[in-house]
Image (cartoon, rainbow, N blue to C red; front, top):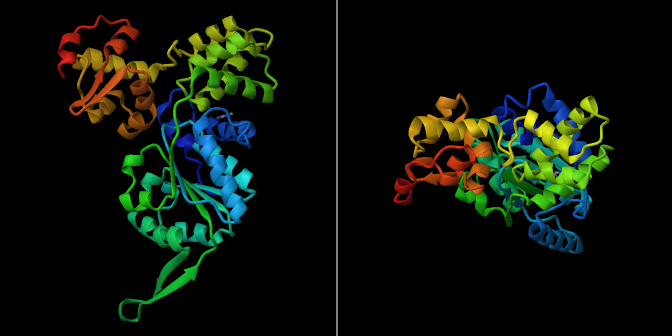
Length: 354
Ligand code: ADE
């Protein structure tokens, strides 16, 4: 697997969890994630229905000796879009080149990558909804008919050069399928959503990672970490590492239920998996905006965070957990959100009619 540019899986996390993930730990995280990344469908836990359809697509492509159709994965960050692309490459027996839309700013960036591809290879573009118009237009004929249209010369002497490309597979990943332009979305043969993981699946991820890293952990402790991982394997994996550090420094290294609870409390991760940023967001809406509705830009400015990062990283889980609600007039804390933070539900009556 070659990483051409930033693997932006790490970027969104870097922005929002600025108090948790320091810049110097990004490189470490990348190595850590690569060590534990599953390479086969069998070792990839969860996303069962998606895996079944992907297995069929991979087998069919192999039987036809054709590259796989272009694929689009969407869903919240940390659910394994890059990992799944790596599994597909491994199962197809081809190389994967990984980049992200913000790294493809100039036409020559995308042209360079496309021209470097060999037959059957996979190009993975993360945050594909952030591709600029020019890059998108270069991609259209490349995706559809495997050629590049290049222009040379100026005004009257302008010539179009058609350069053939080897057949390749584009795998796009996005946290925002709705932000993708229609023409780009239409060029993907296969579109799949990744779902949040259940606690049982996350406990399996925790145990698998602990096994790879030679960390001793009880089933109960794995369940505890899983429950506080916001349905997200990337978070589960990071918590295993942090809790293991704690167990090693304070105890004998083995992670038991009590040690897991103690470490997670110190990390200020509550029993719903919320961290300081999540709680500040809910608290702000309750205390300053009477529970909402309030616009995302206002929330972001008050928290000193980037609105897009809040939308992409923080919100999806709060929405799915039913702690936050999205209304046409902005975000509102749900009665469950009030309860979780220990506030009395004041405007329940009002919220029923909004
Ligand atoms: N690490 C991150 N995601 C994973 C998954 N889905 N299965 C196993 N290990 C993982």
